[in-house]
Length: 457
Image (cartoon, rainbow, N blue to C red):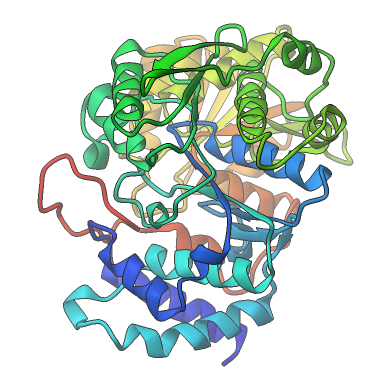
């Protein structure tokens, strides 16, 4: 088997759409020798910021000398971004080996229960991390948490970055139902850290933690501080203490945005919660946070021409609000051109209302996805939101770029899929001849058996 063959095999798995429940993943992991039982995990869920928080936690533990696995999704350009050890992406040779090993295992499933792309990739990652003898794996959920394929593990700690509106089709229409799905990663007596703020969401997380006798630490994002929570009949305080707050105040994060300082507070609180199991000193925390990299999230690039391009995968209303806040904080006097593409299943009218009034020019493009909102739809919404901005629709990012390239400051936002396309177009990442960005597509979903339940992917 060649690497293109392996990628095609993964593409073919998308025909199996999405399913509910963890049975497939448990069975596939068992057929693989239960590699997760030889590993330690920090399991991270949340609406926004979970990838950045994973990257920060990974960087801290790597600075402390551990061999750290990192599992995230979606990838921006290359499939291997999803599975990394010490921030080295899985090799093409290893992808081929894992695919070859998985193929006979899939024959153990009836056709109607064939594992999905995400289920297979989840177990591939477990096998890789076990083979690589990782000391710790930072393990990001794909969608929701309770029934997500990643939820077969029992971690050292569970993290819920926040609870906001997104993926309502799968997770439910209220913050309570969304929080319930994300709180599904909480395990008995396993510490939990969250920065969730909405009272209705936080109540669900607190009740779940109490039922599971799981110590809960709450980091309040408004100040990067935390508060104590009475959980399971004992007092738990996992917030960053005063010394940690001073430590954060002295760090210049390489990731822009006030929201990233909140994510950093969650990362530090998580590390502190596990101090009795994995000791990490302040120097490793500082080093890890200062060296953390997470492309496509408020990533500022200066091109040889002097043009500045800000790439941000803001893909929902909360993400658009964070982007708007960052633009006002870091670039208050700078007029910019916004290149915007959004998936149709997002609240794109709400995102346009937030971003359009800040932009001098708006270039609207489709996201490279079957689920893309059309530039015409976005154009109507942007014109309603801002009468001052010049709004133009294009058939693709490539068509729009010669126009955008004439501007000194360009912001590209609206979807991580669009950011991946931009990184290839701007030669910020090597284009993949196999077109691996398309592996992020998963909308061949089967209808849920029960309303409001999320899919495992």
